[in-house]
Amino acid sequence: MRAPQKKFPPTTVLALTTALAAALTLGAAPAQATDGRISTAFVLPGAKVYPEGIATDPRTRAVYVGSYADGTVYRARPGRPEAEVFLPSGTDGRHTANGLRVDARGRLWVTDSTAGVSVYDTATGARLAHFEVAAGAPARFVNDLAVTPDGTAYLTDSVRGVVYRVTPDQLAAGSGVLTEAYDLTPVLRPRPAGGFSLNGIVSDRAGRFLLTVDMVEGELFRIDLRTGAVSRVALTGGDLKAADGLDLSPDGTLRVAHNTTNTLTRWQLSANGTRARLNRTITDPSLQIPTTLAHTPGRTLVVRSQFDKGGPMSPGEGTPTTFTVAAVRGL
Image 1 (cartoon, rainbow, N blue to C red):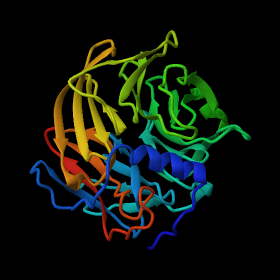
Image 2 (cartoon, rainbow, N blue to C red):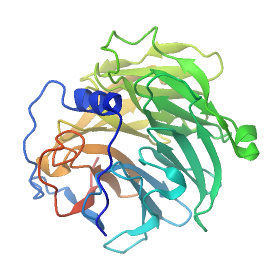
Image 3 (tube, helix red, strand yellow):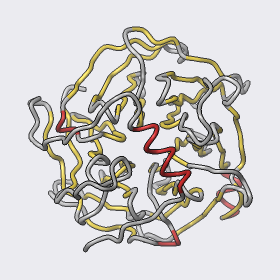
Image 4 (cartoon, rainbow, N blue to C red):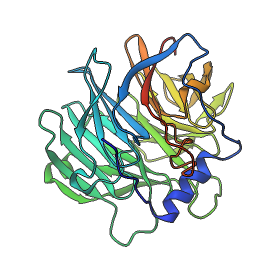
């Protein structure tokens, strides 16, 4: 089914294109991988998918992928070469599907950059809860999210430079306004009005701290969930420029998708989350502007957004014929 082309507010388009196109000229990205560790995991049906978010459900091994173009959420079942539509375009008024996460109880969280976040039952597709940025708030871009072991969700706003919070009690209530939990603007580098900063966010397995990345400056920040203190993580061996999605394994391995450079990196995080050392880099044009990733046993699933082919990075270009999720070994 051909998805309709969405029109986004000028501030949203400006913020996205400025951040993603910063510092390089983008060319066409061929689908053929030059790195033998990269293959295609499954295909996403549709003519204008432009996928961005991904989440895995360890209970069922299903994989969920969201479309930035129209908010469709796809589900890929184990062993099948093509995903299916799980939540159709426009479900509950959703315009985009940026960050996705399946929590410990099997609920699917889906952010809509233009509004907030919705929570769905993965068995039925029913919406269980919905939270929005306060009415009258300045320009926003609700991007990615993490869920801590106690069931609290934290969401980044790429334009406002804040992290929102949804508690289990709020989730049980079913709806409400997103609460600003942490304001990182005092520690972020100056940026143009409407420019991007925060993007991916993850939690450590014990729920002690969050990590979130400033994709433009390439800096990683640690938020202490006990004290509220915000600090820069000391990076050794590289930086996190163009970093989009993050994935943190229980053993402290941090995997990162760098969108415009078609790069994936792997870092080893210190036990307290204050330091990270780069230990692996994979760069290949077949990653096709990777926006995020999810590590599963034996492979890492990577979203190929193709934002530079008729998407938000170059809306005048021709549309790709196929959208896929890559499987990467050895990351």
